[in-house]
Length: 137
Image 1 (spheres, helix red, strand yellow):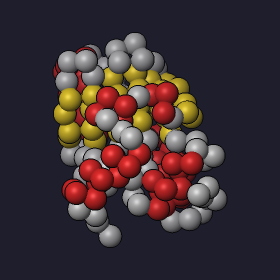
Image 2 (image 1 turned 180 degrees about the vertical axis):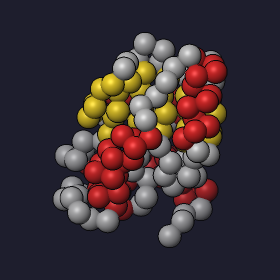
Image 3 (image 1 turned 30 degrees about the horizontal axis):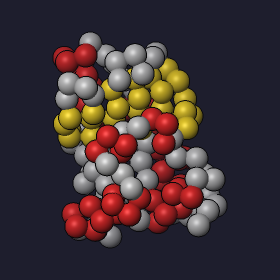
Image 4 (image 1 turned 30 degrees about the vertical axis):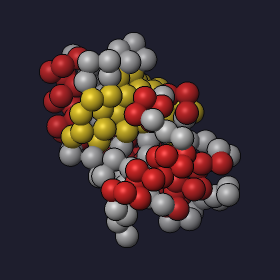
């Protein structure tokens, strides 16, 4: 069930997130590395993990430390879009092909392929949302 923009903004405030900290890679753990990219997720023993999962706010982060580019996968927090943040740009894009095109055009970067992202999203986001994994509260 979708939640309203006001509820999302309230959740950001409740978690103490600002625009900058929302993309802070130290908030998550690295679960995979590929061609300069890190795929980051909230640790299952992080108190926020279950809270985020139960509200549809859990997401993955693609982080490129060399270029300081952060991408959050779609969730209620991002209103179903990919959120890209870098020192030069802050933008939302609706589809992964659009993300790939933007990254290549602006940064000459190629992110991991979508099936790989979807695989990790299944295990680290969707499984938690439907209760397949233990949620810490």
